[in-house]
Image 1 (cartoon, one colour):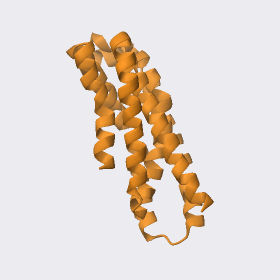
Image 2 (cartoon, one colour):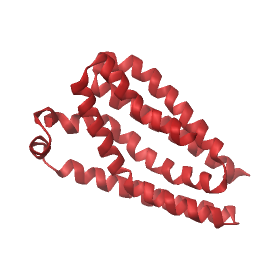
Image 3 (cartoon, helix red, strand yellow):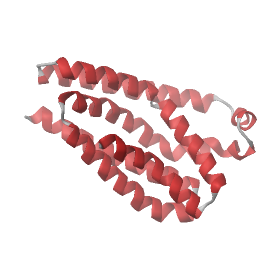
Image 4 (cartoon, helix red, strand yellow):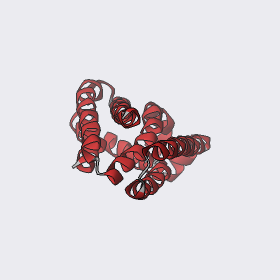
Length: 189
């Protein structure tokens, strides 16, 4: 259920863009979402290791140490991938895709904070899943979705793709903060 909610979170802006900005904006933003998923491949892979690890672990203290280490790796890996994407000249994106991508980095910029922060969520959420604590993931995803919808209806009609990028990023940040809150509660137990 948490994955389904998160999937709606990832895709809501596409529906809002179609309604308020048209199919061209949907096409550009769908490529941004696809690139976001590529950026998250590294943290997603680390998250899979966390799932397996947490299902076998019996020591919360050791878990916390390892999770913190993997969060750092995840954030560094995600940041490195973003840096590599930004090192590619804009004209390459235009050449590979279309002229509409001449502002690709401009459209991607509002997503960056959310993408980097959500890399930590990928690690912690997989830890929760491995421990059977999926309700925490559902709550974080659902609240993130509410923020995405709320800010999407405010920002997308006025700002189009940039509004969608901001609303998704806000959603990722909120989901991450909630996930970190739940993780801190485990630490304090």
